[in-house]
Amino acid sequence: MRITRVSAWSLHLPYVEGSYRMAGDRVTTGMDAVVVRVVADDGTEGIGESGTVGVTFDAQYLAGQVAGVSTLAPVLLGLDPRRPPAVHRAMNAALTGHPYVKSPLDIAVWDLAARADGVPLWSRLGGDGPEPTPLYRPVQGVTPDEVRVKAVERRAQGYERLQVKVGDDPIVDARRVLAVRDTVGPDVVIFADANCGFSLADARRFVRELGHDGAGVYLEQPCATLGECAQLRTSWDGPMVMDENIVSLAAFVEARRLGVADGITVKLTRVGGITPAVRIRDAAVELGVGVTVEDASGCNLADMTFAHLNASTPAARRVHSVDFDSWVTLTHVVGPSARDGSFLRPQADLPGLGLSLDLELLGTPFLDVSA
Ligand SMILES: [Mg+2]
Image 1 (cartoon, protein in one colour):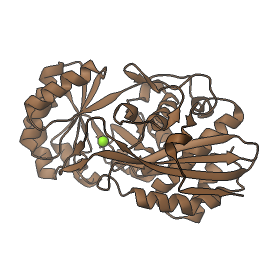
Image 2 (image 1 turned 180 degrees about the vertical axis):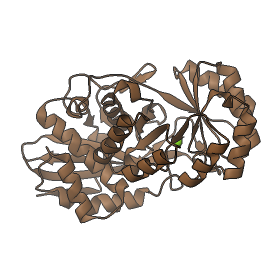
Image 3 (image 1 turned 90 degrees about the horizontal axis):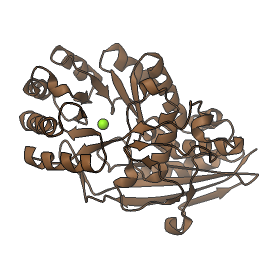
């Protein structure tokens, strides 16, 4: 089997709620996505999506992704799609770095490989079954009163795990977290995610303000570097989760050595797709670390990819994930939804990801190369 055609589209996915805010007044009104289709010589197809949440979250942006996918697509022509790690090595040999341009191509090749075998992706990845992954949803809002209202709304939408964005004024942020805790009670899991926004001094003020039990929250990526997060350990003995700093297997190993990775979030676009994500995930599982596999952008195609990947993570280490399809106003695929109540769940039997592209909605591809 050989890859004979690669096509790619880009599109903007506007937010249902209008905007999304992270620490440092980083506000976006939607996400950008690149969608890829890889076709083999027998007509079998694979599809993949990855994208970016503006230009101020990770070191990635849409124009770079369009250029990079265009550079790498010809490299795939002639390769055997049933061996995704070999295809990924070929991409690395052709272009150093730029993991975010490799991600959609790698996902599409994995989808194609699973379809060629006639099995769902969760099975191709060695999972126990089409198991569910709990969903979480950010609680946006500036004041404690606003987040109280939003937390009630999120619970009514079926989310049993909440993420409160912090990383600005440490005292106001702590009050918002305490307001959410007071609103939802002690049993709802809360992550306080600073998205790298706190200085070390402000992170110390924030955790002190939470009180002696830290409001029972998981502290996610409080500062920009692993070193600062490690120094925060003298003030915070609660669970700490790394997200932005998990750029590679080596970064995860260092985070674990420094004692700041009780859990990790592996974003497919940040690390370069399913191939590197699985390596990091498997190492984390072996070391007893909880793992979230997700991404920074997308709709139902991305969600379904998370659903399959998390289903292939052993249940004891599977944490949670996102359903971007609920965040944005459109979807560019046809097929089953990845959301199942408060969970993501991959379809059980359809080969690969089990979805097909809505070519009418996607329109003209920015790239279409064939052998
Ligand atoms: Mg995060």
